[in-house]
Image 1 (cartoon, rainbow, N blue to C red):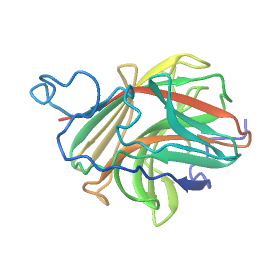
Image 2: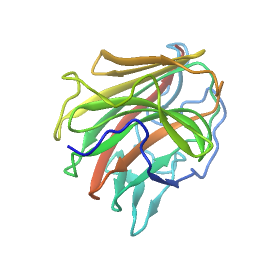
Image 3: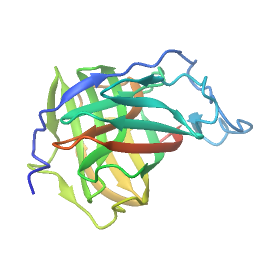
Length: 219
């Protein structure tokens, strides 16, 4: 299968969000007691004005859809991503991610320490069971700690929902799926930054990922 190389050369389309929210402020759903529970930021995407980007173009979609957040990629060899415009250093990110009937040769996941479109970390899985932790620096995509993406039975394939988690604590970056640690590596280039969501297509377009219950927690 032609996929999952050490360095993935993908044209990245930068999708910035429209509204900044203050650090430590949950923005959607039931917020009582969240900060006491260690939740720095939370969105269940029930409020379409909560600040994530809303774009629909010929290349794809980043928008709220039926109480979730959709990233749809309709162009081959492209990534779309979206950010809520907050700044965090040490953080544990979680999200529910479901392939909504699109191409399974895909990639999707969580972003931490986002500086700009050319500099960030991403923990990604695919609907056919692959995973990897990536650094994008100066526009170059680097797979950290591996020559090729790994493969794990912990990743639910096809159209099943995956609970994803990405920890960025000091120089340590850890990726989980469904409660199982998939990968861990160390890198110190980025100390803090925005968080976000990502989905991408390889040779075939038509990737459709629905995200729900995005959380940023104290690690």
